[in-house]
Amino acid sequence: MTSEGDGVLRTQVAIIGAGPAGLLLSHLLGNAGVESVVVESRSQEYVAGRIRAGILEQSTVDLLRSAGLADRLSREGDQHRGIHLQWPHERHHLDFVDLTGRSVWVYGQTEVQKDLVAARTAAGQQVHYEVADTALHDLETDHPSVTFTDAEGRPRRVAADVVVGCDGSFGPSRAAVPDAVRRTWDRTYPYSWLGILADVAPSTDELIYAWHPDGFAMHSMRSSSVSRLYLQVPNGTDVATWSDDRIWDALATRLGHGQDGWELTPGPVTEKSVLPMRSYVQTPMRHGRLFLAGDAAHTVPPTGAKGLNLAVADVGLLAPALIDLLRKDDPRLADAYSETALRRVWRCTHFSWWMTTMLHTSGDPFDEQLQLSQLRWVTSSQAGATGLAENYAGLPIGF
Ligand code: FAD
Ligand code: DHB
Image (cartoon, rainbow, N blue to C red; front, side):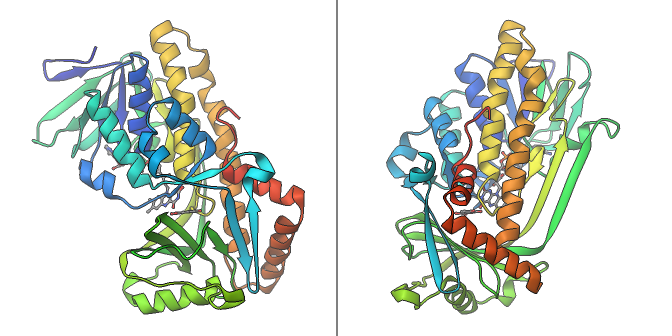
């Protein structure tokens, strides 16, 4: 039981970060009777309002359903059979259901986060928002802890059996693994995304990923009345240099407005931001009594929509491992967690890198010809199309 004495909170699992990984983990643990305390540096409203991912793969939806978290997703999520891939004068539809029997759902990370907050609130979960000075201690012992300053400025300690770092790319958990133990891989890309949210019905039934000599563009959506669109821009781009008109003109050119009767309908822009792109992996994902899940252990560039799905998949492996460890004193799944999770992490890291480098222009004419050749192969060969579909719609958890 979570209890408090001497200013110390005692629980089974201390979770750092109340993003999708942290709250989903607390939910899966709670469903199995394992107690946790979550600490989060931002406010609940800030975390729920961040515009991020928009596509859920099949195994994410299956996991949310089995955890009792998919009522609204089933009503409001939009199931898609596949995507459109295009380059100038050619657009091809890849049907993931025909190719692999699996599909994807349009349902924003903001909505997943709201559903998780509602479920954890209903279950009486302790989440400490707006904390500062989060620090991890005694991870190589069987009495690890997390200290922080709470929203009222009081120093606090959570004493736990296990600490889980779900604190994203900038949290303290990944650096709590000693340098002598951890290994990292890192790649930054020479371009960023300018993303907009617009109050206009999508001009497409399913997502469009477009290669264009001016740079990549993508048409996604959040609902029947809200569109989400992206443009490749150089690193360091100041969003203020892109007026709404300039954005819609570039999107129209790159997405092929006017070709074969297709039209892009512009509308009021409600959000605009520039996102850098990076691949990062840190191993191992477990050290002593510390486990890492989601962006705390790895970052992928957004092309291919893997970040959120990978965070969910990590937690889908970690929750049963911690339940066995803490309820049955059986360490086998916990001991295997890092190696098992990393198989999928590297698959998604490769897929995200491949989609990114296939679709973004680098200015190199040789690269351009290779990209177009790859796109023709992926859209004309059953084997090529199936490979993309299998990775995009997502491999089963435990792959
Ligand atoms: P996060 O969502 O990052 O959550 C980590 C939490 O830890 C945060 O709430 C943070 O405030 C908290 N935290 C950090 N430091 C501390 C601390 N010291 N103490 C306590 N708490 C702390 N993925 C896609 O698939 N498609 C997309 O289109 C897409 N767009 C993105 C756009 C942006 C701007 C970003 C940053 C990411 C995007 N991603 C996208 C990736 C996706 O959103 C992430 O992979 C996903 O949020 C990972 O979930 P997480 O819970 O592991 O980490
Ligand atoms: C979205 C983001 C992606 O990175 C992607 O590949 C597909 C969709 C989105 O924000 O909707």
